[in-house]
Length: 78
Length: 250
Image 1 (cartoon, chains in turn orange, blue):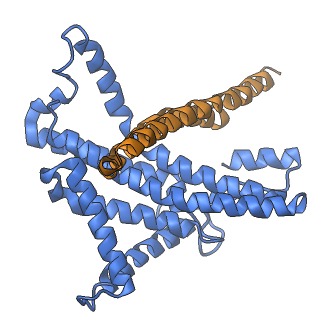
Image 2 (cartoon, chains in turn orange, green):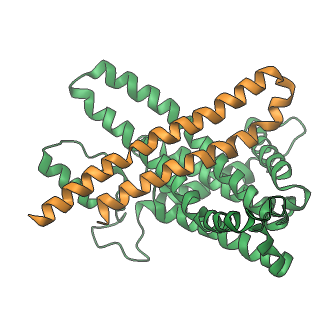
Image 3 (cartoon, helix red, strand yellow):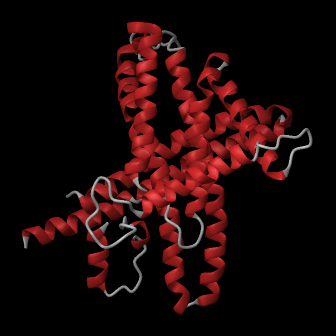
């Protein structure tokens, strides 16, 4: 019985950890949106900054990946 | 992964989205040991073979007007070289072969994994963790060799106000040691999630087939994009870490 409740809590927690995806989506969208609004104002400078944009995306995405990690830990390690 | 598939059996689901990531021996049904030849070995070998074909055979008959395969090789070389030069600076060009190797290995295993029935080696954290841990150790050791204990100034941001510096140093230390984790899980997570999504949509084929076919096509197109972008992100983050090791002073 107690194990069942722990299992249930782990599954609910894993589901809740998926809300982190939303945060990552907002972050990545913010980075790309701002890049685009800057790039459309000065298109000649945009090409040199795409690498910076991808670094920004990667860092914004990293925090979303940690929520994925939490979900994996709850599913398989708890 | 086995735990989840057994759970799916009890739930009465007929599809197993995670089954495609199972590591199985190529010959026989024995247990997977350290030196067992598995499907991971096969697809990694194919990855290396493809890179070999592109770079060695592609440039064996060099000509001023490049053949198609030669121009792909030249394009990849120029693309990565420019990236290393832009992000790591002139000093980083010395480490270009490392970045090129990492990028080509990841991009080829991602693309080979997209073939129907193929096995995606980069979807396993065990594979990506070795790559990311290698980069982390290389960069840290390189930093200490180049700068001695002066490398520790990467944590001490001298442009920040003095009161903030200890707090920032703590954050910098945490973010430094989290690097191999996020570096590896970003790649493995993206690959695994994308392939699992394709499989989930494929399971809808009996219920709503037109929707399923359209959805698989769309997700597959996205996956082709993601396969390239994740390899690019892995390579560019390696360049950023390399820059930190070469120039630790902010």
